[in-house]
Length: 547
Image 1: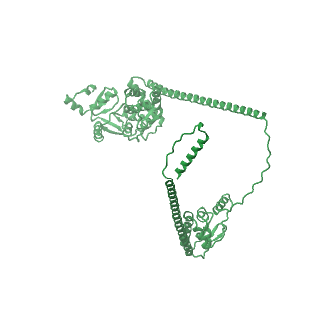
Image 2: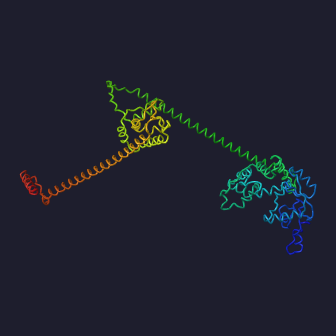
């Protein structure tokens, strides 16, 4: 059966129905086709025109490890030598294969046509793994992979990195020629410079080949990655040579030349980057040297100016110096006594310096200690009250445990409530606690915990009452100050009103204002007598106005 069988039109229904039940085999690749449409597509894609009809009763042997279909024992032996993992073959017929293909088509939909890559892999004995990897069964999908050498070549040609990456991704990393053709067709696209949604992974050609060899063999293969790669390269070279009509050596030489060209381009790019880096380094060194020379010149100029000033000052006459009697030593004023906060700060500094601190204080009565703590604000006395409540609660819960009746004053938490709060230690000591070993407050074992709780409760109530009394006193003081300010403002207003009344009375006593009358100045010819007469008249007029 030749390619003429593939050109039957739909009008020739009897022959078309006859071909519909036939199984065709490509004489060049050995691929089986169960429909004329699949055979037509295969012929268009590969250029092979020879097909033969296969009987449905013809026996075949299917490799269970790789899925390879063999038609005789010679093909089985050849496949076993090519693929070491091919061990088991199952006997069947073409009808079984057709039924299996029909069942698979009904479950999975249309059968995917064999591509050139499938042909090459099948010739290498790896046809089963290619489809699995395409269907996503071989492993999880990842970002698209592009070849670094091809990407560098596109960038050297003047394309931007985004365009170069997009072209390689869109052409499935098909090579520089396919990428250039894609860029030429999509040069005017509006989104040509938009970044890809998924950043591609850049690998060298050698890494891509190794990954492809590793992904297209079964898990039980005993070949190393290098052997897998060599085997794949050999199969690809044979298939390309057969398709192009050249020898395997020529295809290998072309592939080697292509790889060497990519390596040389990468090496040239690295050398160019290294030269640029050296030029940048030399420029930075020169800039640093110029800066240092400029600073040296500036230092020399400053030293020269200083020397000239010293010479000018040496030639000037020196003024006579007046010797002042020595000043009397200042008499130190007596230092005021330190406050309790200053004493606490000094003790804390001494403890931080490594000196042992003494926590002893003058003894006070319970009422005096309570009054001392009541004089503090709520924020200052609150840590002591909280700590005392906690201590008494622990003693009441565990009255026989001695560890709750003893506190270390040098402890940070304890110091916040009993050391830094004025009167707290004196209150506890007045309530039965004793100072031991200069830093421990200890409650005797025979002391009643209930009395301790009662004393702390009374202290808390006293502090609350004292704070409320201070609040009321402060409120009364504010009211008194407000009343005094209001009385003062009222007195000032009354004084202003009285002054205004006095001013109005004075103006009313003067009477209505009279306009001044212009008088002619005496001339020199009238003499001094006329001048005195005019002055007397003016005084009389002024007195009349005043009255």
